Image (cartoon, rainbow, N blue to C red; front, side, top):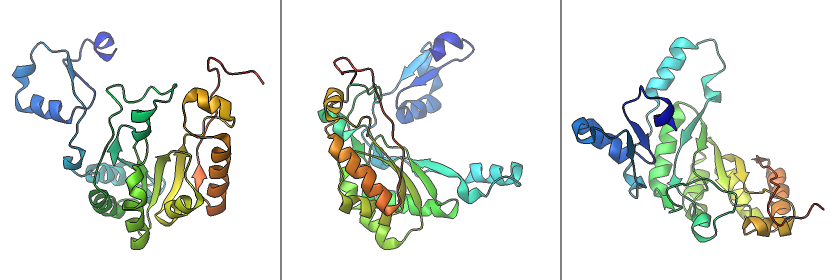
Length: 229
């Protein structure tokens, strides 16, 4: 669509483009005549360089000195790609991961070091993952909790987590989550292939209220086979 409606652009990079864009910079002539340069899923996410927001914060301080405090800014960080649940059971409504659901995650040590390094700029970090890696409940979250990082994190979650895991999220600084609630009726959840029940969804909302984790969630409807009642 971008290529069609913006003819003034020479190239459009589609999909995960760390590799193709770097190749283009080294040898632009090799891509002559290619309007759309398609990338493939990057399986080496642990080798990606750390986020560098120094120029953004420099410009923010220069041009918006009278605006809200810089500590209130949220900056994105990505610790995984794809969806480990979608690899097994693709939710019927999901349009993410057009190139495939293949789940890839960075090591917990790498994520810990990089998010801790960002604390000097802001303590509010929005994790851009489709879903938090399950392994982080035994690796990254205990590390963050032990370090008393002072970070305020957002993570997308699957809704079938128990109270113990919700408490661990809070201890690690995860103050804001978006679980795949989507419905409060088990029949509709089965139509969606969510892999959770209405009881589990309600339990998670209760647990999060108990430990003061903010929950962003929504209700979906209009699925073939659902009942008006």
